[in-house]
Image 1 (cartoon, rainbow, N blue to C red):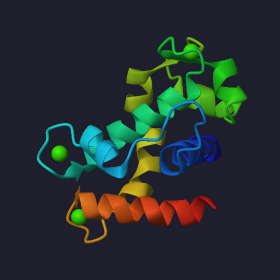
Image 2 (cartoon, rainbow, N blue to C red):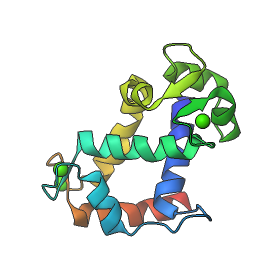
Image 3 (cartoon, rainbow, N blue to C red):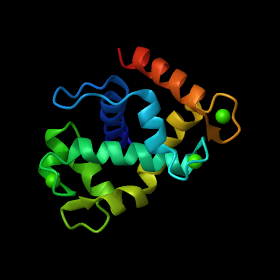
Image 4 (cartoon, rainbow, N blue to C red):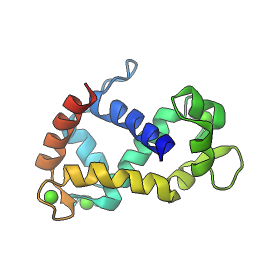
Length: 141
Ligand SMILES: [Ca+2]
Ligand SMILES: [Ca+2]
Ligand SMILES: [Ca+2]
């Protein structure tokens, strides 16, 4: 789990602080809209996971060729063991499908979702989304 949590921390740093210097960080509303794939104004656990995994994936995929190699993973703060825990096919390359299918990744994302869903109804509204990001900012600091 150590590796996977490391993976998430990076993702959190990326999505919550907008630390990327090259691209302007999207507004909360923009991120929320992207996450809310079916457009019903709420982000379900499934949508939330897909959104975070997508951001994580982009973060690790340094050369943007849609696969994460072991080197890219380790260069971005992951560990070798963690890499092969997600890379269940053992091919040495993690695809987005693989990351989404990973039970470890999914388990890790339960905590941020629970935190974001303040009233526990299984859906994250824009308000919940916004305040959870602010909380996460304090946390990252
Ligand atoms: Ca939705
Ligand atoms: Ca790559
Ligand atoms: Ca809620």
